[in-house]
Image (cartoon, rainbow, N blue to C red):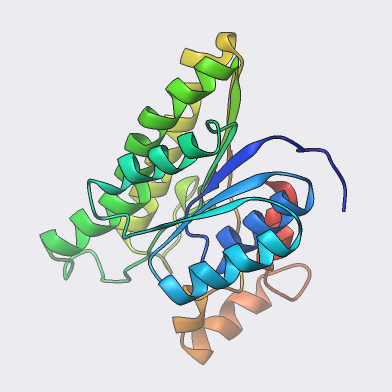
Length: 224
């Protein structure tokens, strides 16, 4: 265990599985106290117990990112630990409805969770950063936000592209005040989202990857 982040408070969304869970555990191993956010209480409490066993403080902020009141609850949880220093936005979803079959409700749900939730959570966390003289935001975007991916829905690609613009905008707006904003754009990662792929699609994806395997949540956590 190292102390790179000793005394820091990290907020991690999507912390009950995949990239979010791996990121929360790695940040804690580096010394950070964690506000873990997710929908599944049992998984969230299990993660917080693991983090506390490392000697770190952990607060569970249970809720669905589609709930407009969740960002305030998360910010309040961070304030209980002295205010956030780090925000990792990993929560997201991918609905695979084709363009001509996607309903308005499906479109809105993906944009709300993958783009609006990070925006309005950041809006509440950034003042905590400013009070502490700076902070770090890492958004989990996707290669689908940078180029067309016919295996993804248009809603997912649009949301992830929007997240890249939000990254650049906030980095420009707040960089001079000690707040660094970056995005990570993974390719295929072995998570719950990709577990829904058909065997045929998985085989096609694997055949296109130079290493012959998908990334792991831990791979992406190390970048975060």
